[in-house]
Length: 260
Image (cartoon, rainbow, N blue to C red; front, side):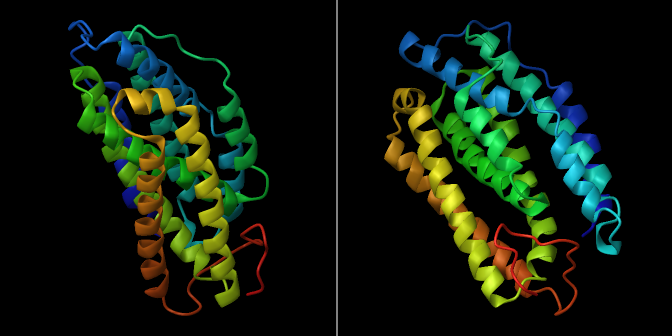
């Protein structure tokens, strides 16, 4: 894994997020029918991006000493910092929409607990699920919301989430390459199940904002499933390209702990 490339990317990109100039002096002209549920929806995403990443950093220390993951700890620290810059950007959008920031929300609490039930790979898998869904969500905002502040932030976060997906795929490809065939199959089924359940919950929790944007929750779930399939196909191609024996793992990886 080329951690140096990702360290350089996150260092530069987080600064861009914190210095992004938004047309916040323009009044929000969205209808109440859209503005109110959208502010509430974005407040939930803002809360989800505000974590400190302490447990993710702790898990990262398990693989950081491995030769092919040198620098991974630093990359994770910078990844978390970029997520926090997203939180700050989204806070600006929520305030622009006249909404209120949240300190607690039930789906966010469940997601945080689920993320750290097992180990690093499962934590990354749950993070991936959130990022795949965020890719669809912010893409929808960019295409369907006319407010310039919302569109600018949605476009920036969409681009960032796409890079996050690449970052996680670079990490997971080398880890999954160390699984045997059964382990890889179970990994895929587990990932698919976690993603499907999360997509249903998010579509229901954000249904009012989605409908105000003209998107049916079932269509949102379908797009999320398509995003998962594209990502999983790319991951499997990347895993296949790794020479046999090169993938390295330091601990039982998926929940099912496959033999290797």
